[in-house]
Every structure is written in structure tokens, then in C-alpha cells.
Length: 349
Image (cartoon, rainbow, N blue to C red; front, side, top):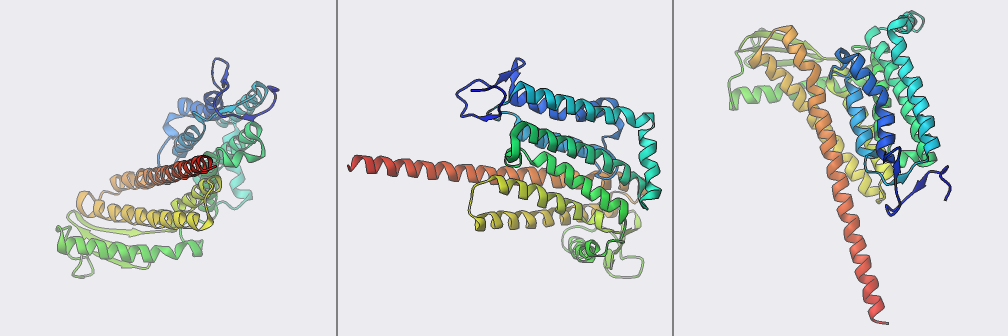
């Protein structure tokens, strides 16, 4: 068998290259630009999706989850070519403080960018998306998306969200803003239920309403234990970005899995409901934080900046793990039944 080909394996042959597993070698090369930025620019790894490179950490986790332990024989030539691509990607991050960052920033005027920070971070994710997609194509050929697509799709989804935020901030993108009043009405109902049935979270709202929370359009007015607090919510804070990322990552998983279409639709619908519920929990948590903990804007913003990721990404990881577990168990059961049926047919001959 030629070593210049990428060949699937059943695990009976060796997969060692450069003294380590070829799948681990591929993983290390793919995440090397992320590791570089983590070492050189550690202060930029903020969990908030539009304030730094925190999303790189989750992309790295997706890449590792799909590649580590993968039983594939990878040619040295392909790995070396991917290593060259990684070096070129790292050179982009090296060049940022030496004028490249200013060059990108100056492009905001030419393209009528509204939010410069989202524009800047967007290019980091675009570069990483191109690198990871190209590397996977080089390593696994045309069927790469059935092997390890989640990390690349997460990066691409993050780039898309940052692009939307850069060009259509706040409520300028009407279709995505539609969901906000619905979420806030549910939030108002939950907060007022907690206040009347569970625990006191504050006096009446400043407009003399008998309840501590009042939603109107994309505004939420509250009066908690530490005084009044008002929120103006736009589509990025309503969890629209998490729904887009969930959709992309879930579709990547379902494309890879061999199951009937109705079963895929059930998994997708269940995950959609779970993502909506997670977004609602996040919004209610943010409201309770202002009502019960503090009305200090900086402290509230600090919690707001990480609340989405610390709730959504664990939910996404757990749900994907459950789907994979259920399907693997189902496949083993079907294989066992097929084996038993074959043995029965053999014995009756």
C-alpha cells in the first residue's frame, strides 16, 4: 500500500508517524495556530463571543474530540503540507501587531463597518476557518466533512455571527430582532412568577407596576433588591448567534451519521427546543443577577459576557454526546440482531 495515500483503517495496522499517533499529530498541527495565539495573546481569550478569541478554545475542543483516536493512516507528505499551512496561518497572527491589524482596521471605512471590534475578530475566525477547512481537505479528501467538520463549522459560524454583528449591529437586522420581544415577555412572566411564588426579588417597578419586571418591545424594566435596572436587548444578546451555531454544528453531525431522515429531524427539533430553553435560562439568569445580586453595570456586563458560553456550549456538548451515544448503542444492537439472525439461518441449513 502506498504511503502517499490517505487510507481508512480498521485499526489492525499501525498509525504511528513521527513517533506519535498520526491522528494526534494531525490534531496538534491543526490546533497549533490556536496554541500560538493562546501563548502570545492570552488576554484576548475572553469567553464572550464578540470580545476576543475565546471561541478558538471551543473550536480546539471540537477538533480534538473528532480527531484524537481516529483510526486513519495519514501520509507524512500530507501532514507536512498541512504543517506548512499552519505556519502560514501562524504568520498571520505574528503580523497583526506589526501593521496588519491597522491595515484591517482601516478597511472599516471602505466597507461601512458599524462595529469595528467585531470586524477585527471576524478576520481571525475567517483565517482559521480557511486553514482548518483546507487542512481537513488535504488530510481526508473530499469526504472530510463526514470525518471532522464540527470544529471548522463552529469557526465558520462564529465568523458569520461576527460579520452580522459588524455590519448589522443592535436592531438594524429586523428579521433577527423579531424573537427578542417574545423572549422578554417569557422572561417577564418567569421573573414575576418567581417573585410571587418562590422568593421576593424586589419591589414594584418604577412605573408603579405591581410586579418587579415589565417588558415592552425590546426593553425590560426591573426594580430589584438593589434598585432599578433597565435592559435594552438586541438580537445578539437574545441567543440568535447560539441558534445559528447550533444549527450548523448539528447539521454537520447529522450529515456524518447514518440514520433515517425522520430520525435526524427528530434529533434536530429536540436540540432546537433545548437551545431555545437554554437561551431563556440565560436571559432569566441575567435578569435575576440584576434583581438580586447587583445593579452595577460593569459587574453585570462581566456576567453577561460569559453567561451565554458557559450555558450554551456545555448544553451543546452534552446533547451531541447523548445523540452519539444513543445512535452508537442502536447500531450495536442492530449489528447484534443481524449477527444473531445470520447465525440462526446458518444453523437451519
